[in-house]
Length: 120
Image (tube, rainbow, N blue to C red; front, top):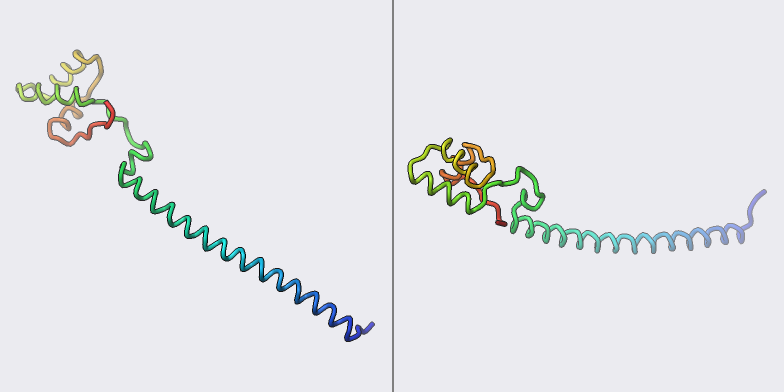
């Protein structure tokens, strides 16, 4: 059955209305997408600032936890100044502070390569 010109016009008008509705929704979504991208960029900048302030590893709490406090490091340097070996210093620290510390950690403290924890 052939459609009349009026029926075709009605279908065409319906399609045009639907297309406009879809285009409007698409435009709103694109605008929302722009706003979200802008907000994401702001959040990434803020996160980058935070990471620089506290350091990437500290921020993630990754890596080994530091066992030597500032007090222990000061005592290690004091004993090193007295001429004790790293192994003897490690034993002495273990006795004084009732904690195990490795000779290599003592060496790092003496050389200044040991990053002390922020909290004591």
